[in-house]
Image (tube, one colour):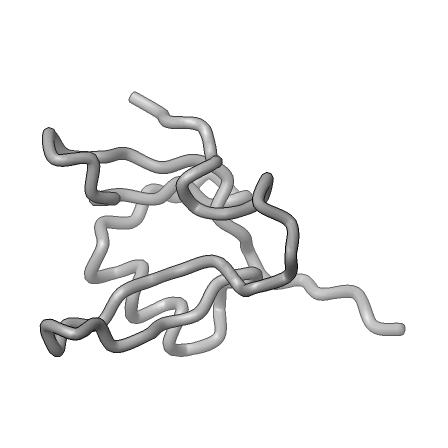
Length: 79
């Protein structure tokens, strides 16, 4: 079985409304939401996918694997 060498999100930042705004990757990079969307879309980040919301905007969410502990909302925050 091949090892997945893609990065993962390990921490997040939120705005005052609680919405995710920035992501910290397993290599230490900090991505704003738009950059994170591009990288997820390009397949560079594992464990997440993009979906189109009812408002027509694109959003990042964790892959549905039945484990709530690795959902984006469960990730720690960073400064």
